[in-house]
Amino acid sequence: MAVTADRVEALGVEERRRGWVDVTWEFCRKRPLGAMGAAVVLLNLLVAVAANVLAPYDPVTTDYAAMLAAPSRAHWLGTDAFGRDVLSRIIYGSRTAMLVGFSCAFVGATLGAVIGVTSAYFGGKVDLFIQRFMDIFLAFPLIILALAVVAILGTGISNVILAITIPMIPRAALVARSSALAIREMPYIDAARASGFRHHRIVLRHMLPNVMASYLIMLTAFLGQAILLEASLSFLGLGVAEPVAAWGLMLRGAAVQFAESAPWMALFPGLAISLAVFAFNLFGDSLRDALDPRLRTQ
Amino acid sequence: MLRYIVKRVLLMIPTLIGVAVLIFFLMRVVPGDVVELRFAGESAFASKENLAIERARLGLDQPLWKQFVTWMTGIMRFDFGTSMWTGSPISEEIRLRFALSLQLSIMATIVAVLLAIPLGVLAALKQDTWVDYAVRIFSIAGLSMPSFWLGIVFILGLLIVFKWLPPMVYTPFWVSPVQNLAQLIWPALAVGYRYSAVATRMTRSAMLEVLREDYIRTARAKGLWQNLILSRHALKNAMLPVLTVIALEFAFLMGGLVVTEQVFNLNGLGMLFVESVAHRDYTLTQALVLLVAFVFIFVNFAVDLAYAWIDPRIRFR
Figure 1 (cartoon, rainbow over the protein chains, first blue to last red):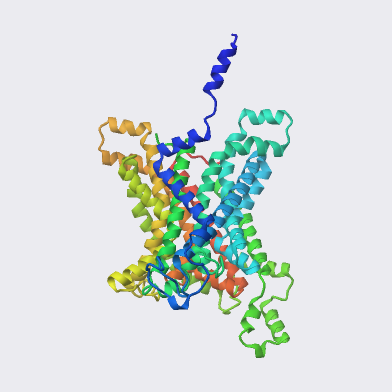
Figure 2: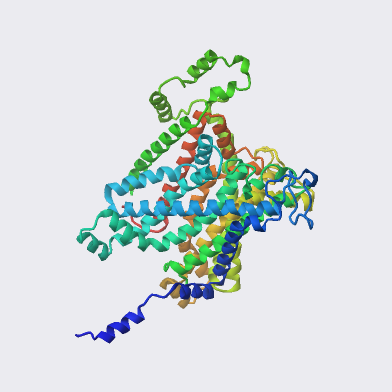
């Protein structure tokens, strides 16, 4: 059966991949909740980038004349025990949160995906060994890891990122491995192997792009989790150190001590955390529905 | 079946040994040791000789491999040794804290199940209606709020609205159940809400999957009651993944409630963790990490067994 040139062309036109704009538009139309989440995430990123322009006060300047001031026209969300403006600290805190969130999620999900796919690709003894090694980190309590990292390296943003990223890797590896196991059996992997490609090329160029759906789902889920973990660690005094503005840190100490007389100190930073993580989760949830055909409900 | 169980139990051993090696060396890398910290307050006695004598008494002067072997042989005999900081047996130190953490985890699980299963089923039945969306937003909100902050808000709300503060000193359940519950219900609610979010979403998607199965249609065609179909046919089959989520979360709660414990002034395992690392109490930290890792691995194992028990289609390999 001869295939004419224009028939091939017609097929080509039909199967042309839709552009980014179309995909985004369709996502927004079909999943308004997810689009709303994405919008809040973008807004949050914008606030983080433009913090120095938006914040009405310097986040670390103390003003002992205005300690524990209630929300007013001068300080919209009140001030803390050192007279620092709560709104400005929240605005600057989004920098810390976004930095920690994106770096942890990106590094954790990427390294995890590479390890998981490699493990699935080689199978057998290598797989067994990598899995047992990952099991050790899965079973290891996160808080101890964080405590140890802080005790060894001290507090600070980069150490918090390290402490949060390490336990994410085995979780990402677990997910990536299970999707990669199915891909390993695909004929195109056999074809790549028969063509004599090297292992790293098959893993990185042929297998990794095909676990993209689970990778993106993990990435968005990790973003929210990383922000929450950073807040908990900072709250415990194991994360970002004063006077850097961070949401978890703002809930620590005086915020609890003076909670009754100055509830704004405890309420607003917590709301900021919740809203930021809520937006990430809303977006991630819709993305998962859109990407994972098994979870598609219709 | 037996072969599978034996294999799984044997596979636990290398993982636990790995955890043991990791925490053993991690703690030694952390600067400072228990002796230095203990003598830090009393500089008059902190001569070099005194430090050396104390280190020798605790066995810290031995080479690392020897310390590790001593520790491991102790564990094989279920002897965790004594705390380097307080000097009392570790089993004693852990027991009371363990009871508190266990009670809190169980209460949080009850809260989570009571919220998750009805909400998840409801959302699945009313798929894509406003009920579904409301449940979804409620559960995603639960995932997004730090539970320690929710705890602070609870305390604040009780204080401002009811002028009442939950008891801040722990009373064991057997001494005064009312006092005990009045304190623990708040952290259980704060943690349980977050924990229910995962389970609600799992219940919903599992129910949706099961409701599309042929045997549900058959049951409907037979004219069975909707309630009977839901409880006997659908829910029972949808419970498997929900059970997994609940069990894994439970394992996590046992050692992971550090921040919530701090907010509610509870002396659970989480706080013990923080204290033991702060004191560089090697023996206690090591024992705690092994305990938490064991609970985690064991719950995983138990879930796999329960899976096969409930669902005969799953075969062991």
